[in-house]
Image (cartoon, rainbow, N blue to C red; front, top):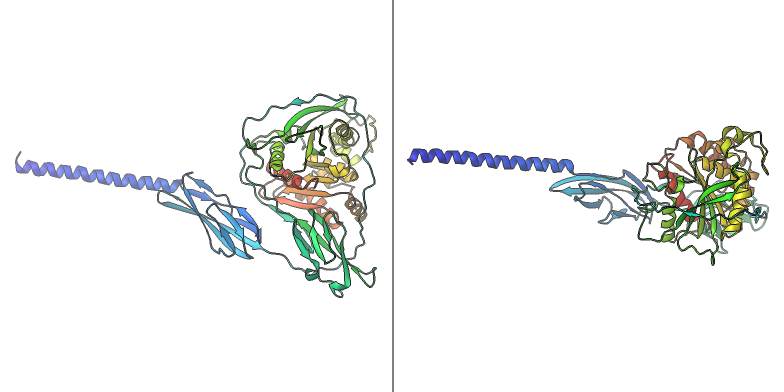
Amino acid sequence: MNNKIRRTVAKLLLVVLSIGVLEGHAQNDVQQSLAAKKVKVTLKKKLTLKKGKTYKLKAKKTPAKAKLTWKSSKPKIVSVNSKGKIKAKKVGKATITVTAKYKGTKKKATCKVTVKGKEKKTPDATPDNTTKQSPTSTPPTNDPTATPEPTKTPRPTRKPSTPTPEPVKVEYKADYEIELGEKLDAKTKVTPAEGKIEDYNISTTNEYVATVDASGIIKSNHIGKCLLVLTSKADETKKESYKLCVTDNFVPRDGFNEYNENIAHGEVKDFNYPSQYRESGQGHAKIYFPPNYDPENKKYNLLFCLHGGGQDESFWTLGRPLGQGGCHAQYILDTLYAEKELSDAIVVFPNGNIKYDKNKEYPNTVPDPIIQNSWSDCYLFEYEVIYDLLPYMQNNYPIEKGADHTGVCGLSMGCGEAIEIGLKHPDLFHHMGFFSAGPFASTKQTIVTTKEDAERINKEIKLCFFITGQYDHMMDDSGRRFVNNCDSLGMNSMFFEVKSTGHDDRCWDRALYAFMKHAFK
């Protein structure tokens, strides 16, 4: 080979190598560009915490191998660790930034955190002479005709998928607020309209909610509302009253409504009971027995949990993935037991639909044209619970008798039924949960219309929750008017709003968790 040929071959080899290098660079550029497009991270935009509280931020990242780093713009106000757990340390505002890094590419997301402290207000004085009385009524009795043998419901085989629960926004109108478990020094925080605090004796209208000791320290006992009353030492007819609210933080942990194989489980069964109000002569329900159920040696609280319109007794325990219809009551109750947040309870899920014949007479009923005309399939259910189902449960299961150990809750239509059952019979039910208020009992109800009605109910009940989704279409239409009416009349009820939910199972799962966390305490 002569020199000319050698030079030509060398040039050709150089060209080939150059092309390979360029292709390699181009390939790397493409891969890096693809990697950049793959990297994503999202975080909730805003969060409000009270001083001293903690919260676990949950960042959603793509790809799963992306590495997350956390940073606070003001660590002295809000600190954050390497796992996204933040702590509200000081009143103010801070921005939490999470950075996802993958193959040299970074993406960021931020959450603005507001830290609030205790509100200091000078309230307007409103006189009130409400006193606490003990309930006098006793539940009716009715012997059952038979004790059916329960049949087991198959265990679920699939695990539902649940997003990170959103905090619950607490709505209240109070002169003074205490978080459950905290204390308030009345002698330093309360300012009378006239005179000095030392000139008054201090008490509350509901010692179940809060008490005051001899030194003026207000102790929070249970969630709820009452009045803080100042009575003049010189003249007992001279009083000043202030609204006092005991609240709590309702943020369930991740997976609170999922099946967890690592904890003990209760059991869901089917059973029938005799009914005077159904053509078949019997009703059907599902029943939840808690873990380590011991009917021979223990007594249990009793809760009736009611379904919505177009549903039946299975809705609360379907255990479907969120958004597919159906709640996850058995998983929620299991979680609360595992967390030691739930008092021993048997939970009954009855079928609230009873065909009503206007031409037929039914025992013990008081005709209600509003409900008869609007929701006729619900009209008889109140009476069945009071005269058939409640006595049946008390006579056939190890139920702790008495209103302090009996509760009722429900969603949507079942919420309306729960309002009719609970508020009409506060001598039988001291624990009530109203989730996504159904309209027939909300807009035209005749139960709570005067301050005397509210005072009568307050003397009986222990716990009364109104809970709704932030975007629930029914609340603005009817439920909120009912809630506001009860609040204006001074009824001891609490209203909570579940963020980012509507009239759906995401709200109702969280509502049941919040309610049962405080029931029967």
